[in-house]
Length: 280
Image (cartoon, rainbow, N blue to C red; front, side):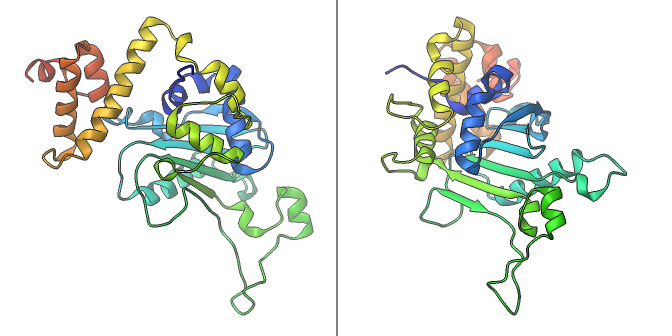
């Protein structure tokens, strides 16, 4: 079976290219259960993170053809306050993409999609969906609807539909055989494999466009460095004698140095200086 580029690494460059929007469009179509078209990729808050964090987390901000926004974030390392981070991300997107003085009707609906590779919260499922509902306090089955005019203007039925929606995919918790389009996507996110039997929207295109065989020697070298980083980071996080990010990065740098990676790549991935690497 061909080897495919890990989804979060592909998201750094490949999936931001207009020609490859079809892969993300398929993923969002499956998740949102509606046909999604991406208008353009926007500058996201995560693009401005410090060098030491950029290999730990990847995010994209897409403006959909509907004018709504979708944040797709992949997080590799454990973060205790991740739920607050999700809230911060949607809040920031809302405030950054409305012009001062604009009417509140210009506030954009935001979909937050989090793909996490660590345990978070307590629950038996691997996929969760959170949204706002306005329910009657005296009549709990009464969900507040928008007026007919508002429904025509905002293209939503319920008042809560105007608020951010959150999708949380706990990739490591998936342990079943893929039997639905969403499960095919989760399986790909977990294993990096796309069997010929997988037909979920976006996966046939991913099968053609995300092959390792299509990478240049330099791209492949960087990709393998990234994969080594993830393996070593996970090992470091599960080892009790490594405390804190600085010690973890030094341990990873040592391993990469032993494996023959050049100093520039080690520095790019771990955030350590050439002098720090030389002293290990």
